[in-house]
Length: 399
Ligand code: ADP
Ligand code: MG
Image (cartoon, rainbow, N blue to C red; front, side, top):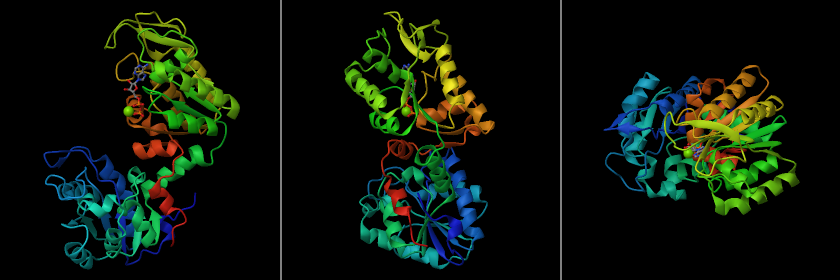
């Protein structure tokens, strides 16, 4: 996919309307985790280095089109100033007089933060009039909020129709990583899909079997595939009503030439709690009163072998109930193997998903993967092969 990068644009002396993700966790008006704020710093710096004036637009929480006390972006201003190490002017409205006055007073390098875009009904309805009021404030549009790109809102999609547009640094990193994983990957490609349920990942599985060479299925959803093959899984989490769907996926994979890898041995326990007694048994030998909570070591070895013979890995969903030891063993071991191959330049590894990011952090490998997406829903929709409106609008944007 082609899109403009900040370096492609002439930003000298221009007002750059920059959509970022500032939807950070707060407690009593104080930011408790600055990860998202820290991640926008390179984009702000790049615009400043090019001589631009940075006007930040973002949503916060779900005010549903009206001003809501406690959801003002003003509470983010101090954390933003700390991350940028400079003064940030807050505009008490995202459009109209206060916004115009704040922008008119800017010098190159200055940063203005506009009020929560979701205080205005035109944001989520992508109203052209609201988009035009935002566009009137600046000259160039930079979108750095991949995490909001699955929504066609005025600040994520509408503005790209009205102004010359480019991807910010974070958006650029996401798009480059996603393209390397599924858009135009070096083959063979292996996908790992784990997590709890088949029903929440049907679109994902259907898309992946058309695009990847190997699909490793793990976690609770593997149990559903075992059931579909007539295997008893005792008290395991399994969606028995999805057995037909699981068989359809297996059949379709046969047609598309995608090899599916299911667990051949599993870790079972009678209780899901820290220190519960567990044992490894063949995948078709789960005792009737036990549940499958992780993949066994033989399965992990098979997964490692697939990784070693692949050039690209895309991963969503843990291989077991990783929150409680020892059921994080398979996820940790496979993650460490992927990290090792990535460090040795043998594998491009991309992962995403709420629990997946937590599991990879827990495994201590987050820094070793080629890219870990924190975009949540947008990442999943992209993995499902869906068009993201915010990304599509950036494609072939004017300069
Ligand atoms: P993500 O948020 O990365 O998309 P999911 O939400 O789909 O991932 O799946 C994560 C959840 O799946 C975790 O809470 C984990 O405990 C659960 N899980 C994984 N394997 C099993 C299993 N064998 N039995 C029960 N739950 C499992
Ligand atoms: Mg989850």
